[in-house]
Image (cartoon, rainbow, N blue to C red; front, top):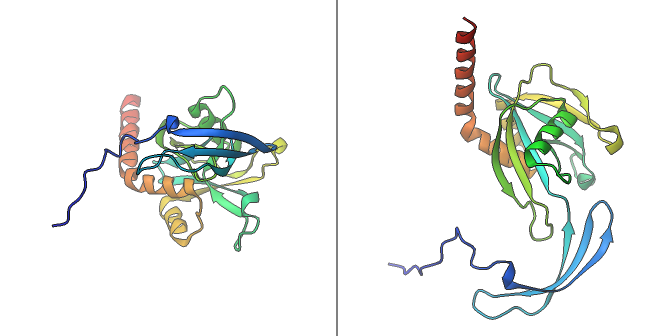
Length: 224
């Protein structure tokens, strides 16, 4: 029988911020986003400290995404827009995504989700459920993304949305869940928010739809 060494609980990190020595931090570029150069060293798993190293970090605002789902119609909202980061994509730089936006000073994460749903999809969000909070690319970027599911009524949704002053040109699609899942399998939904959101929805869809039916039955009984 192979011997498995006892390891610390992964629920608690072995090292924290105090185990890094930040020697120097410089701003290389400051525009809408910032590029920083760091010189640092950190503790090693086998003991001692690393040699000083240089790393470049893309500093961004934190972001919020929201999976807009209509359990009564088993449909979700996808938005389509041009993405500069995908300008060299061999298929298209126009991407299908979830509604998302950056956190502005003084805003709660829930407020961002509701604001962006209105700005990008003309949509009023009901109940919000927190899915995950994660770093999309912690090796080079400090952005943290928080992802929600927001329950909506997709009737009458569609058309072109976005803020003209932000050069947004956003087309809204209401997509049945089976069709969205097929787009995922075809590789058309090729960003982290869509991947995480759709896989979460695959596990929660039945309970969300059952809850919607119960709410509708209670509403009908109240009217009687």
